[in-house]
Amino acid sequence: MDTQDTWVAARELFRDLSDHPGPDAFPAVVEPWLRRAEREYVGVLAEDVARLPRSPGEELDERAADLLWELYALSRVSDVLLLAFQPRLDQGSDPLDGWPAVTRAQYRELFTRLGMAPFEQAAAFDPFLHEIVEVEQAADPDEPISVTEVVWPGLWHGHVLFGRAGVRVRAGVRHAERGVADRAPLYWTYVRRHRPTVDLSQGWGHNSQWRTDFRVDVRTPEGAHLNVCEKGGMDTVSDVDELLTSAERRELLIHRSLVRAPDDIAGLSALGEGWQESHFPFGWQLS
Image 1 (cartoon, one colour):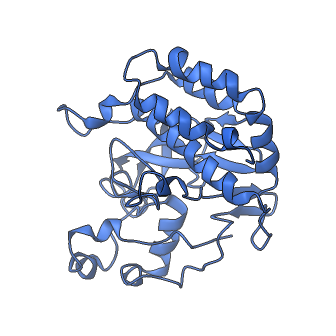
Image 2 (cartoon, rainbow, N blue to C red):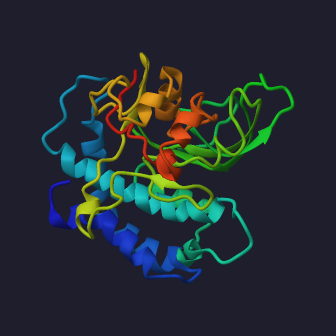
């Protein structure tokens, strides 16, 4: 993403959406932006994404920094447009209601025209592809996770997973615990209506927050590679993460959230109320 016009494109769309609370966001805001983007932006984006690593250890292209920031900005656009499909926690007013809504068809059109491929397959639950939105707790604690409904589509951009599909699931408590798997903080995420989120833009200034890297997950014939641009292992941990078991750290990286109450819930709770949002898995990589 070399030119100034290209670099600011997704951030510009995010800003324009934030300034447009009306119901006609797609024709009034998204469509004009898409027409400009289709001139050069879409092609440049595809070329740059194709250069991203396909396995751990591959060197990043010299232009990757700008691309990862641009993909992060696009992910913010996706996050605010997905709010319309997410459950409300209560019937009161919600400050997130200020974001404009689009239909699922319009959401798919936006990202399809940006060169992405939507998917909604849900024959089997796959945490690489699926984000848990709500859990129906099965009576059998050992019942595996199964998808009961696809809430929004996932998105591929070439070999890179841009966004997971949102799904409702049924599961035994030993696999996905209601109130944790669907309500614990979701990492590498800007915003969700129904749960807290944590990403590395939080706490930074108006401009600095946009220099946040997009998490790159890829799937190749050799398997899935999570957070492939990072080099850290799950044994490099903060004081909070040290209280998680290795299996819990793995689940945090794969699901981007905890899915069950941790074994050492007493020790974590002793750290204070904010422990759930104090994990730091951002440098972990898994293949």
